[in-house]
Image (tube, rainbow, N blue to C red; front, side, top):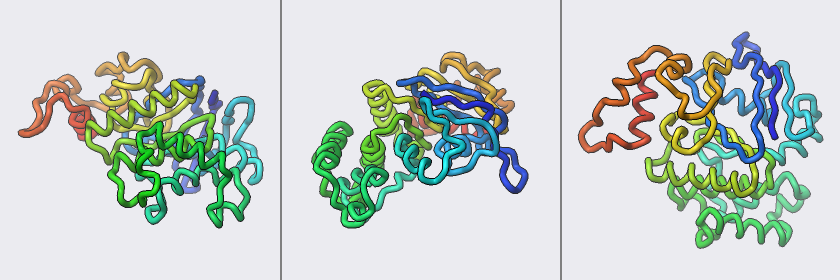
Length: 275
C-alpha cells in the first residue's frame, strides 16, 4: 500500500507544485491521475519515487517511510517502485531482452550489469514477462525495430522485472493510437489485478481513464480537488479540475471528417483543447 501524508513540494524558484497531498492507494488498486498541464501530476510521481525531493510530508510504501532515506537505503527501496514512461525510456541499440533485464540493475552487482551477465533466474523470469506482455517472439530484436505499442510493452515487462510493490505510470498512451491505447491500459489493469499491485497512472485521456480505472484523482494547482469514482466526473467536477467549459457541448460535438466520434482519443483531444 502507498500512503501520502501532507506531501508538499516547493521548488527553489518559489513555485509550489504540491500542497498537503493526503491519499492512500490500496493493493491492486489502479488510480487515474488527471488535471491540466502544470497541476502537479508529474511532480507527484517524481516525489513518490524521490527523483524530486519533497519539501515536507511523508511517503509510506508499506511500512517503510521513504522521505527520509539516505542514498543507500533509497536505492534499495526504489527497487520496489516500477516506472513506466511516456517515451518508453528504452536503450534502442539493445535487444528487447536486454532492456527487460535492465529492470534488475538494482539487484545485481556492478560487474554483472557492466558485462550484462545476469543470473539464470532473472533471464528465465524476463522471458516469462515478455510472454505475458505478448512479446515472447521479439526477445532478440533491437528496441528501435519495434512499434510504439511494442516498446511500451517492453517498458511494462521491464517494470515487472523489478518485482515492484508499486507502479508509477507516466502518460503510457500519449504516443499511441486509440486501439493500442486501450490494449495497453487493459494490460496494465490485468497485471495489477493479477499481482495485487497498486498503481498511479498520470493520464490526460480522461475518457480512456474512465473506461479502465476504478478511481480518479483530479489535481489543480497542486491540490487534490477530486477523489472518486469515474462515474462521478460530472460537468461541475470537470470544471473544478480543468476550469470553465461547456462540457456537455464538447461531448456532443461531432467529429471531423474521417474521425470516429466514439473514439476515446478524440474525446481526450476535446478535453485537452478546453484546458
